[in-house]
Image (cartoon, rainbow, N blue to C red; front, side, top):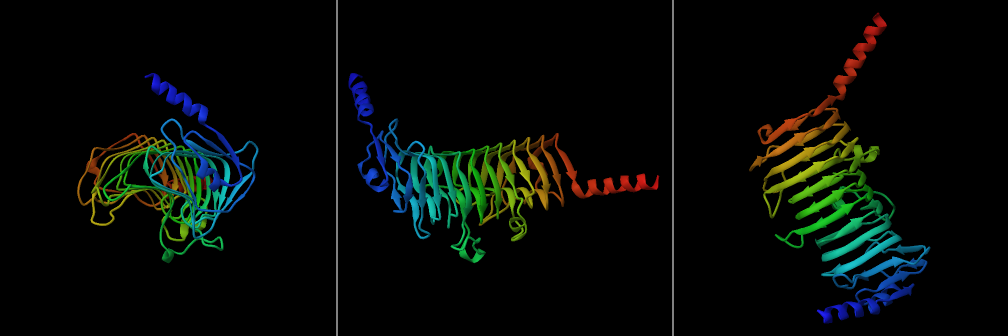
Length: 363
C-alpha cells in the first residue's frame, strides 16, 4: 500500500512541462504525465506519432498560453498517427490544415481530442478505433476535398469525415463519445459508426454532408441524442440526391443492428430523414427507438425503412414532430409501437393554405 502511494507521488513529482516548437523531439522525450506545450508557429513535420501515457498519467499535447499553433499538413500523409497507443490528450486551441488524414488512431484507448479546428482535409479528419475514446468540442470545416478545394468525384472513393471503426473484423470498438463538435462540408458521411458498441453522439452540429450526416453501420447499443443535422447548401442536397439525416444498415459481422436510440435530434432540410436500408447480404433491425425528434422540411421522405431480410422487432416511434414533403416508407409496421407523433405533409398544408386564401378572396 505504501509502495503504491510512493510510486504515485514519484510519478507526480517527475511530471514535466516541455515547452517546445519541435513536437517530434518533445514526443521522443515525453514520459507518462508530461505536458507538451507548443509555442506559436507552424508545424510541418508530419506525421507525428503519438506516445503512450499510463492510466491516470496521460501525455498531454496542448498550446502554450496565448500561443497560435498551426499544423500545416501534407496531402499524402496523416498529421497524427497512433497504433495501439493509449492515454493521450490533444487539447486545443490548435489549427490543422490540409492533411490526408488529421488523426489516424487505430486500436487506441483513452484518447481525448478536444478544442481543435481542422479544415480542408484531403481525406478524413479523424479515423479512430479502440476503446474509451473521446472527441469533444472540435470544429471541422471540409473533409474529402481535392487539392483545388473542390469536392472529390464519386470515382475517387467514398469516405467519412469522422469515422469510428471496429478494431478488426469481428472485434468492435467500444465506449466512444463524440460530443459538441461542429462537422460540416463532408464529401461523404459526417459521422460514421462502423462495428461500434456503446458509442454515443451527443449535441453535435453536423451540416452539409453529401451522404448521411450520421451513418450507423453494423453497430449496437448506439445513442444519437440532441444533435442538429441539417443540409442548407444546394450542392449537397442535389448533387447525388442523398443528403440524409441519420442512416442505418447491417453488414458483417452482425446481420442486425441492435438497440439504437435516436432521441431529441433536430433534422433540417435533408432529402431523407431517418433511414434503414440493406447493404451486402442483408439483415434487419431490432430495438430501434426514435423519440422526441423534430424533422423539418424533409424533401423526399422523413422515414425510409426498407423491409429487412431477417427480423425487426421491439421498435418505438413516439413523440416526434415531422414536417415533410413526399411520402413515408416504413416496413414492417408490425415491428413498431407508434404513438403521439405529429405528421404534417408540406404539400397538403400548402394546398390547405391556398384554399383558405382563395376562399378569403372569393369572400
